[in-house]
Length: 338
Image (cartoon, rainbow, N blue to C red):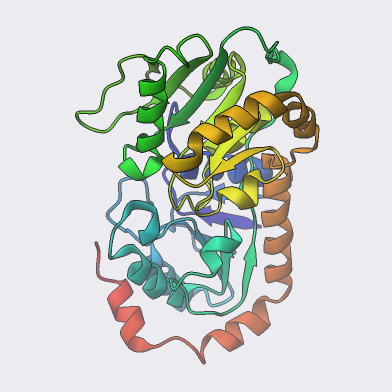
C-alpha cells in the first residue's frame, strides 16, 4: 500500500501538523507500507489531505490536486484531516476553504469532537481520531514531583505567535511573579516564539525546542499551563502531560476533551488564580492520575492505520458513491491556488 501525506515534513522545532505527519509516516513505514509526500507516483492508494492552502510552504498538495489525481486513479481514496478553524485565530476564511476542500474527501477525520460540530465540512463519512504525542520522547520517568515547598515551576510551549494561544494568561502569570504574594510561590518558563512586541519581565523565555531537548525542558517543571483559546486540539499540552506534568487549562475549544481529569480548568482571568490555588492543593492527586494519560502517538497512528485499512477494503463502494456528490463548481474552485 502507498500513502501520500500532503505535508512537507521539517526537521527541528516545528508545529503540531509536522509532528503528526512524522508520526503517521513512521507508523506506515514500520508496518511495511510506502509513504510519499507528493502526487507524482501513479499508484497511490490513499491521499491524506492535511490543509486546504495550496500555497502554504508546508503543504505539498491540496484539494484541487487530489481531484485531478482521482481522474486518473479512481480507486484511490482521499482522507481529509481537519485540524484548523477560523475560531482558532479569529480569521474569516478558513472554515469556508475547509468546507470547499471537503468536496475532495471520501472520509473526514477530525482531531477533536469540538471541530466536528463547527460549520466547516459537508457532513459525509467521518471519524474522530484524537492527537497523540511521542511517548518514547515525552515521558514521565525523568520528572521530579513538586515537594510542596519550593516554587511551583510552570511551563508552556507554542510554535505559533497568535494572541489566541493564551498570551493574556501568560502575561498574567508574568505579572503575578512580580507581586509579593506569588513571587516565591511560582516560576514560569515560556518555550517558543512570541508575538511581535510581546516581552516577559519576570518569566524565563526559551527559544523553540524540539524532540529530546524540548522533553528535557518540560520535564524540569512541575505543572503545564495552556491558556489557548478555541484550540482545535494541539500537541503542546499533550507533550506536557506525557512528561508527567499536571495541567492547568482553559475551558475552550478541544482542551477539555484532552485534559479532563488531569488538572484544573479555568474560564478566563476571572478564575485563573483559583485554578492555580486548587492545583497547589491537589497536585499529588493529578500527578498520580497521569499514569492513565493515553494520548500517545502509538494510539493515534493506530487509529489512522485502522481507518485506512477499512477505507481500502471499501474502495470500490467509495469510488461509486463519489460520482454522485461532487459538483463541477466545487472542483473548479478547488483548483484555484491560494
